[in-house]
Length: 96
Ligand SMILES: [Zn+2]
Image 1 (cartoon, rainbow, N blue to C red):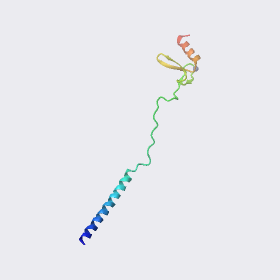
Image 2: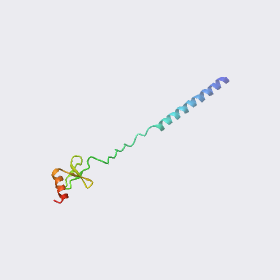
Image 3: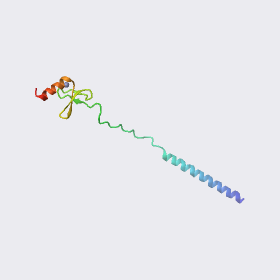
Image 4: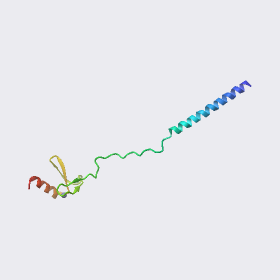
């Protein structure tokens, strides 16, 4: 009789322990759950954008520095739409 009572208490404690263990486990699982709304990563800032244009000082046309006719004048790069503008600029610099 005593043995069965002790066994019953043991089983009850075991069950209670298991129930509390699984409830804590599931609670922890729900706490760890990742947030559904994650902020989208910002696009990397590119300071040297390809659409940066230079202005031809002779005719005022905006040109792409990568494809324009360019010279270094007084330490600064100057970009022209073509050879005639470059020649015209150099002429004005020579005082012609
Ligand atoms: Zn030009």
